[in-house]
Structures are given as C-alpha cells and as structure tokens.
Amino acid sequence: MTDRPIIFSSAMVRALCDDRKTQTRRLATSPLRRVEVGDRLYVRESFAVRSVYSDVVEVGYMAHERASHTEFVEQIPVALASSAVPTWPSYKPSIHMPRWASRLTLIVEGIKVEALQSISEDDCIAEGAKLRGWMEGLGRPLDGWMVETEQPHVNVTPRWWYRELWSSLHPAEGQHWDDNPDVVALTFRVVRGNIDRIAA
View (cartoon, rainbow, N blue to C red):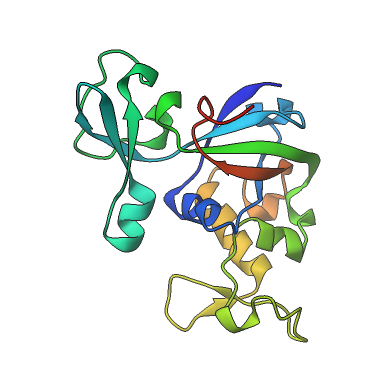
C-alpha cells in the first residue's frame, strides 16, 4: 500500500464531500498511473492556516467558504502538524497543502487506462456531476440524465458537462478533449479524515 497526494479543485472537493464523486481521470503520463488498488490518496485543496494555538492549528478550506459563505474550519492537534506552522490568512494553492492539513482520504478500488472519450455516461456521473434534482433516484428517463451547471436553469448531459470540465483543466496542446489522450481512471472510496488519523 502506497500513500500519494492528489489535487482537486474546490468544485470537485465539494463533490467528494457530497458523495457525488467516486472517480477521477488523469493523463496517463501522470504519476497516478503507478497507483494500485488499495493505495491511499490524500486530497490537496486550497486552504489557509487561520490560527495557531499552543495545542491546535485551525485550518480553513476554500471549497466550503466559496459555496456557503461560511468557512469549514478543522482543528488539528499541533503535535500532528509539522513544527513551526506559519499563519497564512489568505488561501494557499492546493499544491502547497501539507499532508497533515488534508481532511479527505481516497482508498483506490479500481484502475483502468483508456482513451479519454471512452468515458461512459455513468462514469461521467461518477466524476461528480450534480444531477438535476427531480431525476435523482428515479432511474434513467428516456431523454437521459441532465446535469446542473453554474448558470441558473441551464442543464446539460453528463458527457457534455464532463467534456467542459476536462477542457477547463487541460488547455495544453495534446491534452484537449478532441485530442482524445490516454487517461488513467481511478475509482475510489472517500473517507472523511486525515490519512494519518483514520484507521488503516
């Protein structure tokens, strides 16, 4: 079993917390290509160290501050954090999140390598699509699932939603949706807790 970091945007962190996201796809050239079933991934997200006391470090997470205007703050024992923790009043990019500040752990349950456009509609939903409310749990309607977008009253198919998500994250030549690059698709179980504080 190997532990590795994995970066997610705020929107995808919210999908993880809402139990909507159980898959992720990364370019086949990513270090995540070496992941094996049973490996653990600790989620890196945009964060801020709000306060450092004698016994706890308070960490805020951008994903929920943006969504609800109230910040989710976790108190982490100083003994578990690295020494000399600085206070960062503003949010830091996810790449800088230390392992001890992570609040979500993913347990890898499945791996496959495939062409990007091979993704199925069900896999698009597992990537974190937010289904239009009245369709949730009712089975697949004749016109297919519809997914909510950031724009009010605009709904799209899961595949269209995922194509736009991928394009927003991969602007480089050779990585576009139309380039159809090979990707590693990971299926995982989400555990709400720091990787070093959850049961093995």
